[in-house]
Image 1: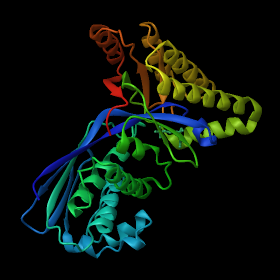
Image 2: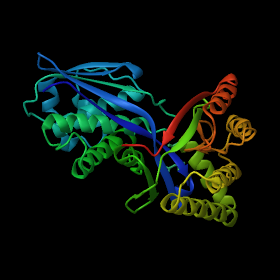
Image 3: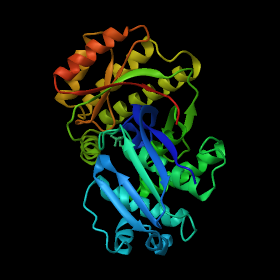
Length: 351
Ligand code: PMV
């Protein structure tokens, strides 16, 4: 095979985080900070997994990978037991190695693919709620499916995407247990998706992508802790919290119809961004740094909300369509002066 490159975007939750845990609708979109995989053939019969951003550089014997039995690989620790001779440190590198071994043995098995190097680079910060692991799993499944010759148009067709998404989800399961599947769906299909637990995600046909700023507080967040805090608050005040969750659902519904019906970037969208953030703050999942980002951007007429689990992580700021690039630069600079990491990007672009 000739060398090839594939890429996939990250995701942001636009509306509905936390409420989605209780069966309400959330809306997520692709964020054009991408993961890229470069696959190059090798002369020896080894496979090298090279992930310089997370300090992984492993060379596997193809025979060893082929010997792994995928049917018994449902749990990461079982994969690890079978990968004798490879020292796997804790952290994001561990998930990456185990998902790679899992996908390789499931897709390539003992097939005679020959050796190759797969190098993945990513612009997505790890562990910030931007779906870096899903983007990794989508490029990984695309690359390996391409090597098996199963893709018709290198991921371009509807059938290809379905297959890619399926295997990326399996990778997400190895890495995270039982994730909702929205991250890998957004990374595979791009655009905007409405997601409700227990039903298929619905893609929203928006007329155009949104300009946004994504601001990283650099404060490590724990989805588990934030979800548990909301659960405890709900146990103490069921009616109050349920009505907040219902309001968040209404916000997602309103956003869904805005995306379907008209140019999405309008003052109504700004309103619902503010409303959604206020409700999340009421649930206790904001953080002083997220409030600071909201204040700085509000002073420049831009609406912001936390995105994902909160308590740190990232904030999302809508950039008005008529904002000049100088104005956006100024806000980004103000945010960076306070120590935040700021990315100008678009939401709703290609998968
Ligand atoms: O920050 P993230 O991308 O892990 O998002 C968490 C979203 C929650 O709604 C808070 C939890 C969930 O499982 O949906």
